[in-house]
Length: 362
Image (cartoon, rainbow, N blue to C red; front, top):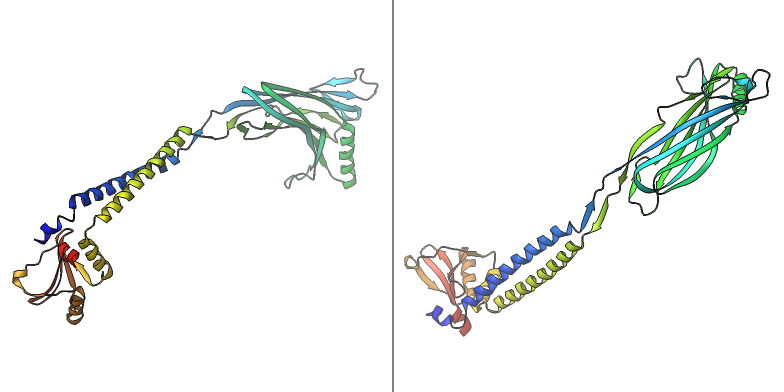
């Protein structure tokens, strides 16, 4: 009878409708949030570009100019000869450098001709040279490759051989050592991409065309190291990350959709709560307030087997619990409509029946 009377005031169908709607839209909200997170990882798209092949190469040529003498009619001797050091005036050296790259490019070049004056101990070179003195033959110069794929640099300079030879001889005589001395000269080129270029050189500095010129000898032969006359490598593009505007638009739409789903879910929860019965509110309050004292059970109690003792207030049931030290049980008879709290003590059952009708009447 209680449940029939209560059904006029409590619309269980609408309550369940708003509950289902709240759950569905919350699930939709969660799915959209997950999609947004996934799309967020793809806001930027990475572009990996194929490396560009390039090469540095060079050729060295030289002439050995002689002092005035009665032995040679020529002013200079060509490369590949033996040269008496006491007749050498200076050495004319010509460096030819070629840079090639597979695609049109813009590259800045800074280059100079440098070297080392090296003096070694002939008897023992285990610990390295006695002296290794860096020298600058030609100060740094600049050149530029503009929207092209090849650059050629030619540099010619005079090496005052007698000055370096004099220094090496002086070191040997003043220190009384048996030494081996020579000049090691090379072209040093530093490449750099212009501002705004999206690729870079892994090794931006290269040394080419090493020339070895002996010192402190009666005759010399100039050696050109051909092993490093050509060096091939690759220019690597920097990893590019561009904003994927399609993904950004999708994220904005997903966020708007998520807000819509969240709003509908919240509204549904509010409507569901407004349609909760007075019975639900009463029982939930007791279960929340006395959570440690009340045990919810899914099994109905066969009341015919027990001596029933009716209790009119929940507070009286609390007193019984304190006296008997037995737990308070709650069983829902009809969802949202009717239930009971009870305490079993042997054959006695202290029972408080609650219905929607009785609560609303109270």
